[in-house]
Length: 146
Image (cartoon, rainbow, N blue to C red; front, side, top):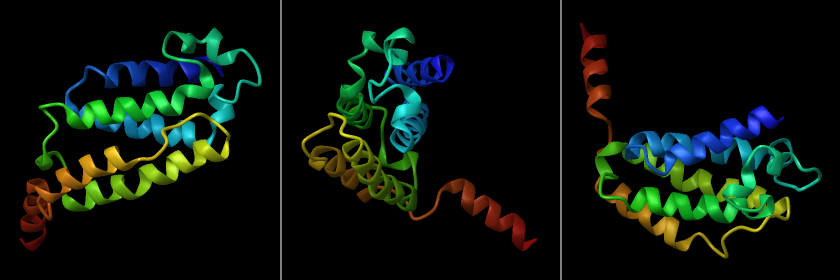
């Protein structure tokens, strides 16, 4: 379990300094894994696994959802995070899935944000400037036509 927690903490830490696309991918993975199984990542404080893996250098285990939320807001607010990183569909999926993840944290009685208004407003704004499909998708469609 300690190795899994360290892996999550490493991804979380790198997300703070990585380019936006990598940062968002890392945060998505950390959020998905920890929200689906908070106890497996030492967040429910049933033992000392979070602290033993170095988690307390970030925050107390039960406060991780709040710290994760702040990191999401910071990552999505950085200058290199632009609408064109993802398609409208990808931004929409993020907008739909993050609240579900934070509800799972709440159900586990972990300390999270009071609401997701700021985060969802940032995503909505980014989605507004996004394209319907990515340029890569267009290339793939052309290849299929041949």
